[in-house]
Amino acid sequence: MFAELSAKDVHQCHQIAGQCRDLGASVDAWRDNLLATLREFVGAQVIINSEIENFGMTGDSETNFLGIHRAGWISDEAESRWREYAQSIPVERTPEYPYLSKFSGQTMVLSRNQIWGKDTWYRSHTYNEIHRECGIDDYIISICPTNIPGRCTTLWLHKGVGSRDFTPREQGIISLIHMTINNEIGTYLAAADEPSLSSLTSRRLQVLDRLIAGDSEKQIAFHLDVGKAAIHDHVLAIYRHYEVSSRGELLAKFIGRARPQF
Image (cartoon, rainbow, N blue to C red; front, side, top):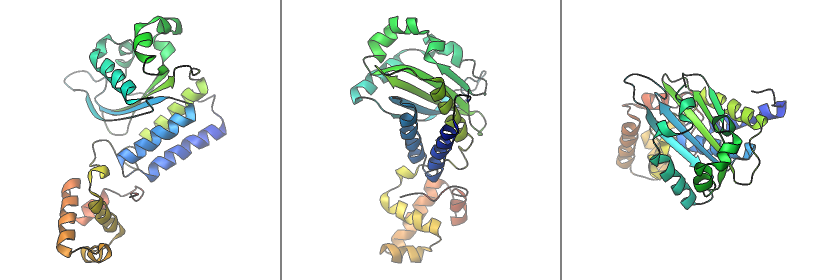
């Protein structure tokens, strides 16, 4: 899978992973960076990233979608139309299902041609009435386990209509970046079900920044020119947000991660 990659390709893959680590305390920030840089690297139009629990599991375990990020649609209307289509088709009736249902915890990468065959794809209602109208064509699906038990992430990348198909090199790039990133979810990189930085107010982000820097509440109040009682209330709200009861427990949430960029 990686035979087509040059040393420069591998280096750039690890650079992208490094950029994500720098943003790792914020799940939205690092995933948005991943989508933007990977789209550009492989010339994709649309990229969709999901974090999922119990994907492909049998028995009583229910599949749980923890978070999803999308980028690259040609318009809001195109994205809305594609999502309506995707939600209207039972997963068991999709051409991808026989392949995806075999996922057993090992990395799986599938191309459009493996699933459909090129001729069948271009004759299909799915392409002519949905994908083409939404501006997307050739696609790759990558499913990769994380180090969190029972959890994986998926990457769906689509080329734009009129673009050339994905090359073996681009498929290798997608696989390498995906596996590298997934090894660090829950450690260097925030997982989808962790409390989000983006849901904190701007003032609480400022307070969190000073807490991580080691300032006392009195120092934070002085630095931000805010009353000590107000700062204490912000600190308690931050503790509730991260489900901790002390500064030590809060700081432990950020051990091994780059300091958040506010």
